[in-house]
Image 1 (tube, rainbow, N blue to C red):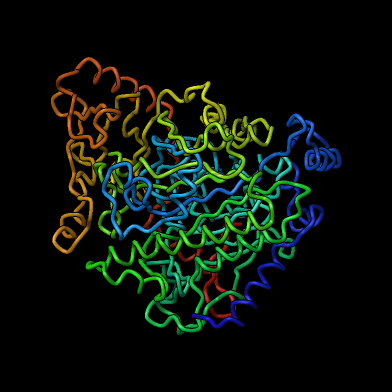
Image 2: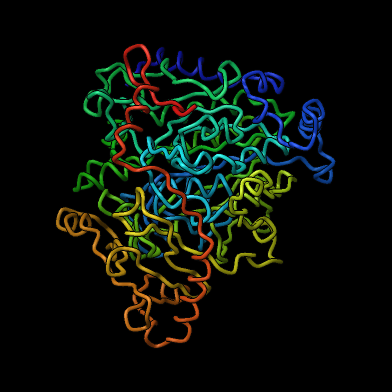
Amino acid sequence: MRNHAQIQFVQAILLCQSVYSFGETFAGTKPSEAFFDEGLPGGLQLLQLSAQKNDEGRTGGKKKPNVLFILADDLGFANVGYLREGNHVKSREVQTPVIDDLAKTGVRLNRMYVHYMCSPTRSAIQSGRAPINVNVLNSYIYNHNPEDPVGGYAGIPRNMTGLAELMRRGGYDTHYVGKWDAGAATPDHSPAGRGYDTSLHYFGHSNDAWTFNIEDVMCSSSPVADLFEMSSQTPFPGRPATWLQNPDSCTDQVQDGCMYEDEIFAEKVQAIIQEHNEASPFFIFWAPRVAHGPLQVPENTLSKFSFVDYDKRRIYTSMVNWLDTRIGYVVQLLKDRNMYENTLIIFSSDNGGPVDAGANNFPLRGGKYSNFDGGIRVPSFVSGGFVPEVRRGSWHDGLMAAWDWYATLAGLAQVDHTDHKAAAAGLPATDSFDLWPTLSTWDYESPRTELVLGNAKGGYAGRHEGSTVVGGLIWPPYKLVLGAADGYGESVSLWSAPIAPNASSTGFFTSRPDAVCGRTPQNGCLFNIWEDEGEHNNLAQSQPGLFEELVARADEMQKTVYSPVRGQDGDSTKFLDFCKANIEWGRFYMRPWVS
């Protein structure tokens, strides 16, 4: 690891990068990103936004809360302690005391649903739309269809309004730290293009924690480094963070003198909080790399779990413990700065845990890449001093979706979340509900009464470029699953034991076995997930009328899905363009690459 002096140097630079004034924010921001009300002249737009920065009258005289949104990556349902306690399967392998304490002193969201893989969930949260209305694919980062200048790219279409744009309208200082994975082709796709004042992030699905290189992407046999920053000192939309690059010698086997990528992100979050001017609230979206592959963790954390007898499980649980400790540092800093009492902390995973990579979703069926609950029902809670005392320590069993945070946070920021920019471009409207009334009191049920599940034609095989299909429907207490693979297959149809995976199960888990979930009562999949959370008892044949009603509802939703052609994975011309745009000083660095 780097020595103390090196770490202090990096921290000092991060602190400098996080200091900026409201006026400076606009110095490096193009007009279309700085001014949000397109119906006003530029000068009035600036006055309007500046007034919103300091207007507390819209909140009844109360301060708007700081918001810290922590989106963990690939976190399994049984990889946090508080959910194991509820199922009476404690394990000393699962050590998440900070996460557990935050959950137990906040509101545990027992029915929080996401998409079954990374980019669609992240696109949904940032845009306020179900994945079927924004993105159901983990497209390759270099995909591009020039015939569609709005949606012909990976991630969120260019003309959708980002969550941070709403928060900035409401007077928030907005910061993004960590994994982005919601688009990268143009400046509009970047965090800066979606409304974040500052960012320190990587664009893609997965990268190496020590080299910061994109996994499985090479230009002329050379790796592409993916670490990018935006601050008041950089022109829009930012620049490669080459000053944070580790020495070339750094690997998971050679960690001395190297900085773990998530350590850089955690220190950036602390720097933002340390230097924050409390004249305005902050919105920090912290998206750690943990616990996505490649499975890598600092040796001093891994050594604490030497008693775990299976390599993947040992590394995975070490990564989660590492993150838990850093969350603790951030929470303590909020308390030290007397900011905790007015901070709302939102915690969630982006999808279920990958059972072939060390994660565990017990007692749920399935995992990442599956519309069974193990792939889409995730650990989630709200905590912090802003949570009303009457709700602290409670569970909430109402249906919720990750894209509901869009309307919820817009409500707390006192701004309208209607997306006029998207409507003008003919894009789908938001389908997000404000959850705060049901989270802050006992007087309201969840406003969400159904939830549509997304998928790509071909299922797992179509995850990079398949067309958008409805993959099922949750209609409490029932859930319909419609397989999208050949033969109506639904991936990862398996159950984890309380302590899993292990050497004997890894081959089976890696195969991601399918179940048939067809469109008739004879071959369909229907469950009462409020009574049967493991999805063991298929009701399709015993309740054919209900099954057919839900299939008809899914078919109705299919008529309006958003399914652009984003480019072909094998398009060598677009890949060459990507490489040409990302070379600098003889090395390849990821950045927006389409003019």
